[in-house]
Image (cartoon, rainbow, N blue to C red; front, side):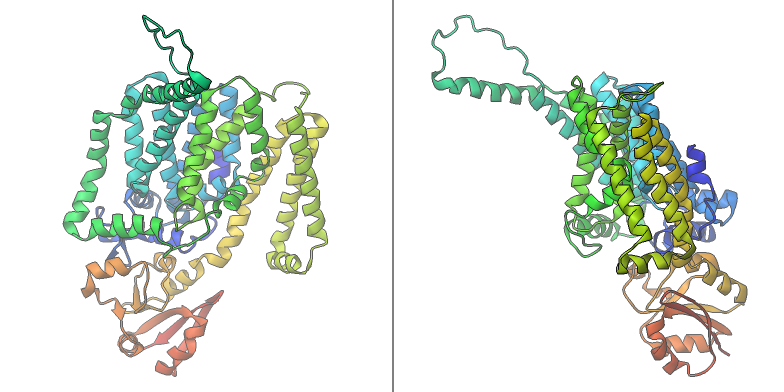
Length: 563
């Protein structure tokens, strides 16, 4: 099942800017420049992120060629491995049935499926971060010290995938759980004094104070010392520090840029991707539909069963991830991907108590949830057939893909209603699988608008020795990947700024259109990539010989015949 969801037509959509184009181009330039230690983008050092995913992408290219399938293979393999990790954690914490159901839930979360089919850093980061967190929790609860080495090995790989946030998140999850257990566990019995005071505390104040001190003492008695693992820390340092030290040696401004500007700066200031603190609430709902509708039932159903610290840990795990990134001033939707596996585990554990052979009596909370879900689906179907003005315009933009939307709405609506009719919760899983199977077609539809694949092929077909690819206030790493060429750029602020500071002599940037025109006129052919609004200004420098090759949304590709 997982192989079909994550690998079917994996290479059909074109790589999309900015993320997929960027990371594919970095992998291509690793092979072209034969430099595996300093990532490059547009032939300039690109040091915003550590190199693990770049290395995996370059290895995939070296084995499978410069294809979309090869580019996305590390993410797809990471997503599939994450599904298996969820199964094994569910089996270890609850039961094989709970692990299997949790794996199915995760594999049908729309956000997880989409990010498992796209080249980003987040899926590989999520795999290693959650592997480390899960192994650390098993080490804490089972007293198995040997697991710590594996936990910190996984966290070291997570750091190499995206950065030190992996260590921060793991520490917050483990620490929050230990505090929670200290506050909720009954205090250990205290030995009776040899000569007890016969007088009770006045007004009961002493009893309350004793309870508070007992709880604080319980916290102090939690196994905090087990988090101190010098051997595991040393292993992580041996894996992580060599690359960081090497880059700092090659480029002395690296630590300041990487830690202060890129990580702390993005977290503490709204300079990049500013969003409100509640941003991730609708994002989480969208990434987990339709299962998010059942989360309240799963959580309340768990409270009615005998106490289980594993369920509390899963909620703390997901909550820490959501809270950490919600407090960040800069936000992007994929950041909360690590919260999805623990939520899937919570749902799988809840479903394991209502699934089995034959018709089962669904509990009252589940019946109410399914009824609300089904009615909501019927309303959405009605809006599809009789949409108001704004919605009608959006549906018209879908064109032939509107039929796929209708099929998705039908599956979304019928699944809860049939589950109620047949009293079989398994119908929900069938409906979720059908919805997940429709996601690849949606990704392909989006790629037609966001991928520069056709533009890149046009440039590649018309390229000749001495030609130039020029961006006018615009840069597309995907266009570089598909054409196999780097950009000359009219001066503007971009993600290449730090690399440009490191190599000011690159000669790839021009301060004004006059210098850029001189470059184009000295080349046999030049390709201009720009916004349509910038065309009148460009035509002032090139009144003749500009040929429109293609248009994509508000961007155009022009050809200029020079000398």
